[in-house]
Length: 321
Image 1 (cartoon, rainbow, N blue to C red):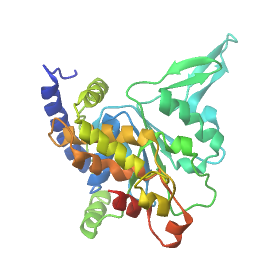
Image 2 (cartoon, rainbow, N blue to C red; image 1 turned 180 degrees about the horizontal axis):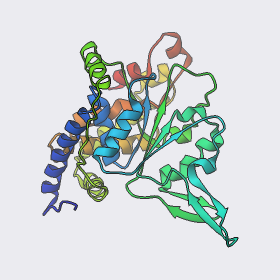
Image 3 (cartoon, rainbow, N blue to C red; image 1 turned 45 degrees about the vertical axis):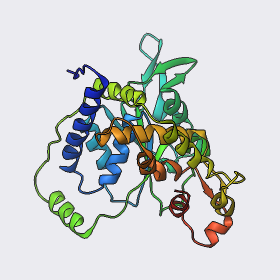
Image 4 (cartoon, one colour; image 1 turned 180 degrees about the vertical axis):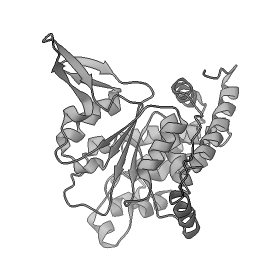
């Protein structure tokens, strides 16, 4: 049964408490990756989708499965391959014994959808996720079907194995709130991982939040008050990524094009959620900075000069900050 709160302050305290419990439950299975967990949960509470990028074996799939277990949500995994068809994701109409058509729902009808190696499938199939991610619904044979709420797409990409891959269209990349990088674990973390995964034991993850509570917290995040100067700071950051903008020296020198208005929206939403998760009732500039890298990472494109000088996207974002 979902918790009830008398006011938004109580609800904000409830979210901070739930976040702490979530981190503890996830840490039972996933060693390290604290920053990744923070960003994925932030995206979920902001009704956003995330792109997880990391080399094989960094527990991307395990992380998503563990989060869905702790959140008491229905989880579906889709392995993207070159021969995957849109109907394999969305579902299709079939004929029953009475020769009537009926719609058989595909794996996209879940709360959390893991799109594994999303760049291994052609653009036609990638585009099948576009409506689902933006509208939270799919249209089959002219009939609209609403997806269960809450709904999130967490997509993974392997950055080192590019043969046989199809880059995601810019329109689809922009629909992801965050681009999250997974790094190798530290030496001690890897020792703990090996100990945990080579023992004959199963770790049980307790359910912390229900779907109804998550939806309520999503609405709470949008009600968080924010000062005008913080909103203006977020919008200014987005403007500084756009070549040709007054005062945007870094963008003029190193970027082909910059982030659109959706980046400003996600900076503000992410800042609101980051403040709540840290026990604050209103975000400040530091909360905007805390989500800037994953928001901008897939929305700005380096020019030839930046690539020739070996300046990374993260390095450019740091200069802008």
